[in-house]
Image (tube, rainbow, N blue to C red):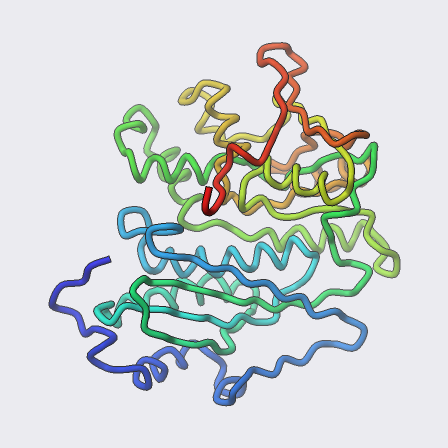
Length: 339
């Protein structure tokens, strides 16, 4: 990104003054030492995740305001915490900046992070700032969970239902609308806005956890395998199946799609967005059929049972109506770094 003239730049104020500005976004009783100390409750496990966003890879000035970059960076990490069955405690932020970044850009970045985090009472508890030829936002998030409530990828069993907590494809479609506005000329304004919002302001599905805890006994391990769909629905299902040593059948008519797709995209294109678009930040859960349907009923709004875990290792997309030929779902068609 280029920031010619005008605003006060990071190189104008230096590291220490920038840190003074950023410390306003952190609880004063936690920051100030070489590391943050977060107290966890006895009998709980600490869950840690890290996610990195890079300028012109994960965001750009064409598609994402600094406020939205901050929101997305925080949401991506909270989504990983939710996918593990944990509740967030705090995050640290590693920030790499070019010297000519406006200070106002950095403040808006932190405002976006803070707005996303406040909903879950999650503070920014520290981090680091360095000079770099490219803007990078690296966040580590910390959460806690009862050991028996931790969700892992390797627990899917033959006969399990595959549940998604919401629609897929909205974020990918929103990004396309930002990059190529002309493709949405016939979309109603409300649909266009909703798809773009899905890309710029994804919602981590921490709201799913209390429903799981209510259904299952907290003293027994959760009979659930899962992960989030930040790298795409196809990626999530394939990764779970690989880790669990099973296969899956996905029923294409059951995959939840945004209503905006109904009269805008051909069915095959809609499924491409849903399966391989990524960055929807929903949860994909594999669990026994009865509680799976209870979860879907409780969540509503796009939640659905989209398939079944089977023996073998193949993940197959099937259309029970026969309108779309069966196809093998792989990792090759989604976004992969260095591919």
